[in-house]
Image 1 (cartoon, one colour):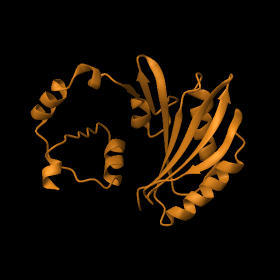
Image 2 (cartoon, one colour):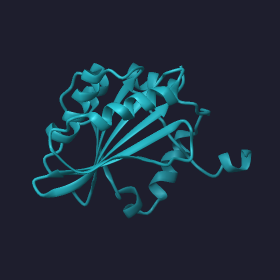
Image 3 (cartoon, one colour):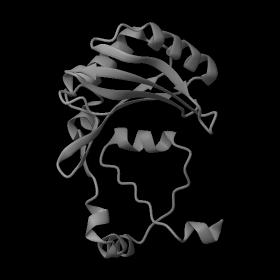
Image 4 (cartoon, rainbow, N blue to C red):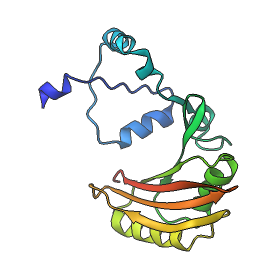
Length: 186
């Protein structure tokens, strides 16, 4: 395994306490990095790889613990939106909280019908039970735009990740909405 670790570079930069909290919740091994070597590595990559996706992160959201009115993460390719990501912390199925995030992601932030991902970071002792309650709520949820295909659960290779997909219709454009729940433990 130590040979594999030396083959890749991953960089995590935290500028806020919330960013550090998110990293602390992840089950990763962190190592000190020679930042000069990392910068040289990134610069040495072909430009089209570096610029394949433009990522817009709502820094105000990160700094204000969720009170901002912008998308959490927006991915663009060739100046076109390709994905919207909305994140939330979930310890229980708080219907008002979940509804707020769904509506923001598919109505407020999504005038173009862009593929949307709602990622719930779950810290429940009974992750399977939390997912079952969340999935039940999502199947009965009254989406504010037309549903083209009902919610279906997707098969995952990890018990720590649950995923479901629904197809929505916005102005005659059908797009997927994915719900992901990630068990980050307690």
